[in-house]
Length: 446
Image (cartoon, rainbow, N blue to C red):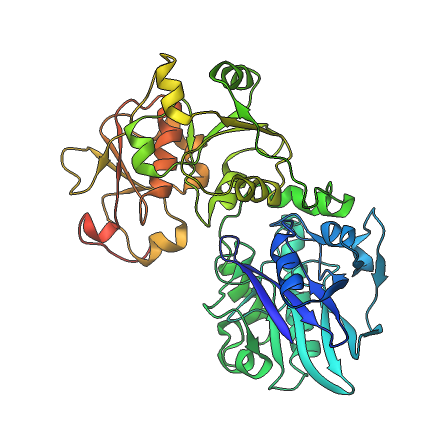
């Protein structure tokens, strides 16, 4: 009855509910409508309703795309959406096909947050908890402003203890946020859970904590988050442009057109794998290899108001690339260099290179670890300098400029950091393609 549509890169799940009468309800869809439309067609269902649990900060909502496909949009009244929708309030009960959707106010992750209890008659059969309750954690409460973090954390405690933990233990919980989401604190690897499982095993609720203990545990789990999180709530409130299934092809740019776009402040993003980037790239290009985490790092490192030009290779679907950028708020996508790097080189333009090291640190004087703080605490080289990738550009002036070897866990983030450092004037930078353990003995802790 409930089908999860998972975006592993952003760490989120949307849900499609078969209402049993030929219609479907969708919960918290992301901007790219194609996965939902494919699933609807496969199951011969009609998009009837789309519901939002809250104003999303980590992705642009796909609700308007599905409204264009025939669905009716429902959203929390506190969202104050500036586009047509039905505003929902605590205690509302709405018939959906042969089922009932009960609205439960669960502020915490956001002040307007609602959860939705799906009932078959009087029997609860599923809870769509958004970010209020997740597998092994909850969603963070500091995305609005620092002064709201503690009050919203207290609201989250009460929402879970007084509203959600009173539901049956065997009730299936379908969270939106999960593993890999920078909105989450302490999420486990499973994406679907039950009320009873979270009572027993959610670390934030271990030993039946009081509100103060919960507050300390939650606030201690916060890490950094992409800056675009601070902008997308308003994008979703206003309503993003609707592109539909007729998304135009990615424009192909000549070398001269690419140079003109760059001269007008477009960001040059190279989406090829790190080996190709190392062998030769356009000076000043940002390396962000095409992978599941592409959109997160694009939004983290590039202001969403900047136009973007791409360098790519291979045969992957360019519409996937465009939709990934649109999903984190980039509307100014200019195009892709026609012919890729071969065209650039054939035009006699300069080519830069960054070496990849596969063995040891060798003669490099400084090792730079660009993983997240949580990864660093779990195990790091004691001699390494640690700077999260998201702050490398602003920290470049404080990082040693000679003999610099950058590492992460696989190499992709390290190459991104190296491209930023090279752009910032570091002439002698290389990338280690491997784990910290392959460089030497690691230690744990801060």
